[in-house]
Image (cartoon, rainbow, N blue to C red):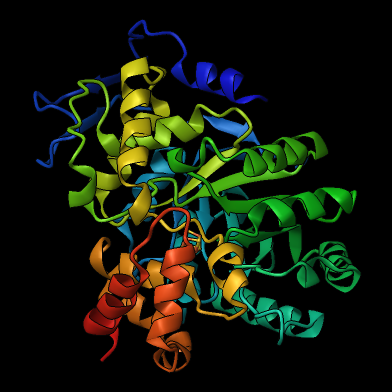
Length: 405
Ligand code: SF4
């Protein structure tokens, strides 16, 4: 799909479409920060989409389970389920390693495993990764989830093509045959996504689903656009994550959001759903209000207006210098040094924007000692090499100040 076709499919008709069974019960302008009430008529469900060549019909909104869940009765998960969001995306490392154990009671409460789509991930760095270690971690994940199988098993935060070599693809095939997983894939957060996605296509099978970072901020990124097209042709299911393209809220407020149809968060989700190549969005929803806000947008048949889309593009433009794309082959590659730029930036985002200091600390822990030994001059030089003008000196200083202790 070329960019023009995609943008026009996102804009869609500007006519307001009355949604079946749903009413928008707020007199407040969407985009304002006040709490709104989202009402749903009984039976309203988030639409589903076939996930690549799999036999999974995934809701287009997927519950991201990185947050702490209530191990006794999690109201968010149950509300999601009522609204058709029966696909849970978790990972062994989420909630500081507790996510699986807190999802297990929910699976039991639903009472029929087949009614849920459970996806989980195991992260191993390219230096330590072996098929045996992945299998061992998968088995312990299944034990914690108290289930016999995963619908999708992802290698998590893949940064290197080594993890797409024969031994790992064969591991995925073997696990599918044993019934421990139904489908296999990987998640990718970094700027290496286009290369890894294309490599997955070249394999001619083995990778069923890819979860990757994709938001309105990536719309003009041709290399990624081509990789998405290739995955679509290859029948690989595509799940978008980090779709809000988050940076500190106040920075985005330079462009006032005045839409009466959608909040800014809803518009960001709609923009990605408007790309028909994307099968679903994994979104962390930490309270019922967020579940309602996101599900309402997913159910709404109304498309983004030209004005709403232009506002998003304007936001992306004026805040470009605050958003790290993970293209460290530019800043680090030229320096020939590993600086963990995108990881540091993401830790700061978790702390400042999501206000989740504990998760930020958890993520920073693994790189903290290394980062502290970096020369300030290298950090400054990397910042100068960044084509998006990120102020890396400020970012590294802030990380230390906020979560370094
Ligand atoms: S700092 Fe700039 S060049 Fe480096 S990864 Fe981030 S966006 Fe890319």
